[in-house]
Image (cartoon, rainbow, N blue to C red):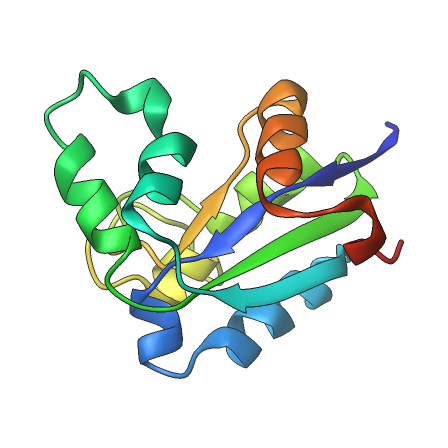
Length: 140
């Protein structure tokens, strides 16, 4: 399996509970490297652009509201099979169904407040990284 990059977001519910370091510890324990990280507060336009593929879905407005409700932490992770690995580390969207030790099992509040996002494909990872980081911000 090749070394690749993926794009996680630590969503607003987690920084509000001071969980960034705990989530980073789970990421690092998995063997993935954090090669870029920044804490930001998205505008409504940024959230809508990021989630534009969901525009026709009923949860789109609520998702944009949630993602602009407080600071978020944007990251770039690197490692062997990073996309699949991080999706495994995140756990199922529903924290009740997530495996023990996953970020969502440990930290998610609900299916709406899952504490984390992760890219679902190489194309998505490339797009999401490009939307949120300049090349000189990634130290990998």
